[in-house]
Picture 1 (cartoon, rainbow, N blue to C red):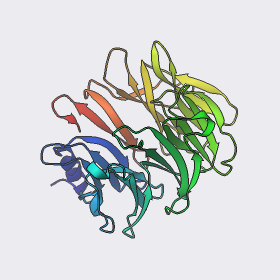
Picture 2: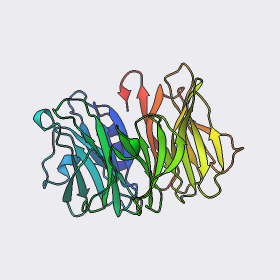
Picture 3: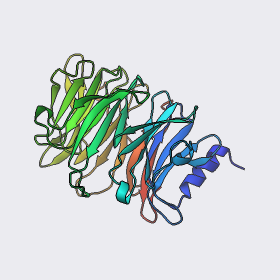
Length: 334
């Protein structure tokens, strides 16, 4: 008989619904999963205890807040004691925009308005994106703002209203600096660009960090010394990575295909992982490299020869494993 961990992996592989995203808890003891609808299973989210193999819908972790029909797992706090879920509602409640901040140990819930959250590494702040529906209501979302709130759900400070700095459309909180003092933001209005905010001085104009794309992103190294941004070099390269030093301003590029994206540092910051798509192919491959060594040859971890393509992925807490969502020809995501 296999271990509880092996049985949990087998149970996950057997789920009739497609796993669309995964999120390790910081301690590595649990996984947050988002599922698309499949035979015998509704779209929603699961919280998986890796040691025991127990899989529990996130809406059942606490009974102090009734879950809406559509529930999504939004992410863990850095200390692993809390997670956020989004209850989108349906029908007449579509504009509800409810986020629940769940304390797993206490079984308590703090409820806030919004559609997305990004935890600060210090856990004392969250960046909350709130997408506003137009008036009169319709199914088209028009604009979003970014607020910073306390980690317990109290307080609210607007740092990026949609009308600020000429921004009139969507905006997203991309990444916190490791010290929780700076927030990388990307407005979805042309020209697309990265903005770096000092959240301790919200009255100051943000620092401009150059061009972005509507679907590009960025990530900090654990020590805050390096920032990796996705940029574009049309017409041949849709996305490439720029590795920027936040101390001396130096930068280098990583580009292995038409798309080089999805950068993520290992927990100790010694490795940088990313996804690559070749021209004319929908397949994605997973690579790792040494971010400090410009001459290092990226190492291929998983390719289209193993599975049809790689989707979302994540590092385990100790940096020993990379878990990824693979698209297989006969059953979709797994």
